[in-house]
Amino acid sequence: MTSDNSGNCLAWAARDKSGFLSPHTFNRRAVGKDDVSLKITHCGICYADVAYTSGTFGKAIYPVVPGHEIVGIVQEVGSEVQSFKVGDHVGVGAYVNSCRDCEYCNDELEIHCSNGVVFTFNGLDVDGTVTKGGYFSFIVVHKRYCYKIPQDYPLSLAAPLLCAGITVYTPMIRHKMNQPGKSLGVIGLGGLGHLAVKFGKAFGLNVTVFSTSMSKKEEALNLLGADNFVVSSDNEQMKALDKSLDFIIDTASGDHPFDPYMSILKTAGILVLVGAPSEIKLAPLNLILGMRTLTGSVTGGTKQTQEMLDFCGAHKIYPEVEVIPIQYANEALERLIKKDVKYRFVIDIENSLN
Image 1 (cartoon, rainbow, N blue to C red):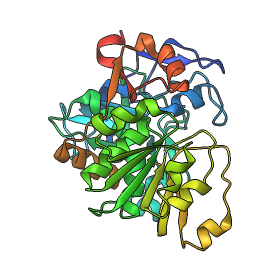
Image 2: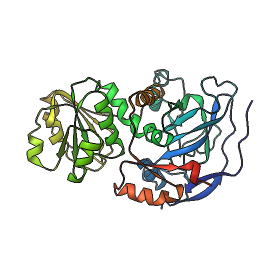
Image 3: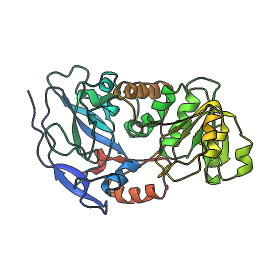
Image 4: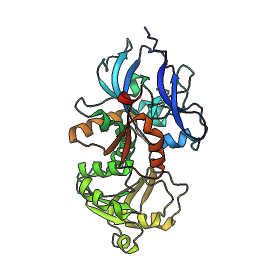
């Protein structure tokens, strides 16, 4: 049994490479037997929203409705859905489908699907239409790619966890950065970086923040709870940390040197890159002599995403957000480009998209 939710469904979309967003109406696909339909209440703003609406992350299929940090309330479920019910608080992240049959899907690492994951927007949906993201009144998603938000967790705060949160949580778990007493460095203090700090403290780590801006020191230490703050351009401060850290999470997307950070790692230390600089340059001896690892990571699989949400609920880990109406989305994207946000924009879809 399916339901047809087609009609004048409100959204904000970019129509060309200017990336400028404006109101639009679309249809969503019908609710199938394995689907969940949710009324979107909030959607976080990620840099991917800038990159895909402007076409800088490959070909954009206009009109593009961005947004892949989606939270809302279940309105309807398909006949085969047992794990969700009407009224549940749920989230949707960066992808909405995969082959569900390859080795990675079978290991619940669907983002690495051998046959290609389907992204939440600017991808190809099961009905042949282009996927549209969370700057939208509602969304229909296969049950596998929906996540339960802890019932008492504020929906406006849950949104950034669906991309920024899981993007840093995944490599922290994979590389065992959850060992109390170990030391973690966090490069960059934006949407991803501030959550890496919060996770690090929840795991019992000694956390050092690296930033190019001294202006972030007070918030890094007092608001986010970091133990140390280092201005990365200060060579003396950097040299004083030689071979002192077990792990580093690098969230910076601007080009930056890697050798100074590799030198800060202990023997067998690990640096995980989750930002996207245009190139990586480093001296091979910085890897070889210290038996160090430089690796990358992207968002996580479905199982780990649910674990991360449950962990945040249990440990009261809340992103720092600036809630905005949809009418402010273009200004917010401009501010995001300028790194003028502390620390994640979240659109109040429920109360402004009308």
